[in-house]
Image 1 (cartoon, one colour):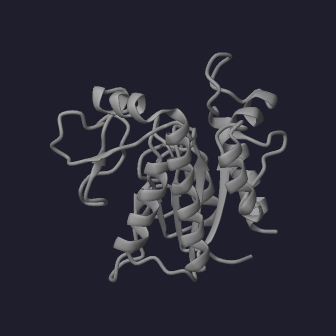
Image 2: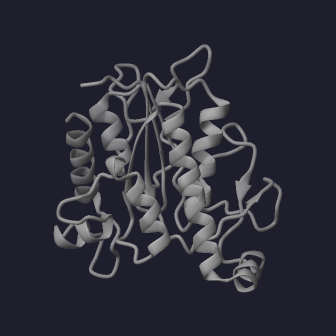
Length: 242
């Protein structure tokens, strides 16, 4: 089994649970809120990311997943972290859950009146900008003017940019999908990187897995419950160790 020191994660509400630690620096390996440390009481994980960090026993966990957001935020936040902090291709693992391609994200300053303070988990200490809420007039006007299909093309390009960059930097990465998206362009891009796709069984998506294993939050809420998150973490861990 390859030993990883750093776990960098992103996604939407199917992964979000706060940052979960701190990134590595020139003087520190970073931190993980779920690590087993005699001087630190680990907090309970509410996401597969925290459970996986425990199983991998990583030194650093950073989880930039943000509820209701999409693939622009996912790609940008991963790239920003890799560029700003002391991540090495030798011992860094990146895992993301691909979100709805129709979700358009727009960055903003921390003093913007429409900043999404509810769902964005980081502050200026991690990244130099935040994101607008997705239900405000600015986003709605953009979506109306450019159209859903164009947004899907744009957000899918971000996914391809991210995966191509990770491959070129020789950084190990895997991805999950929130849903079994019926989008030809996104599917075509994801198929190009199929060797990095962790298909859940039953599944292949997170929603389908949780529904078929009765591990949803409720009958109307398809997000994983704690058992579902633990099961997903176990599947990821097994796949990583193959």
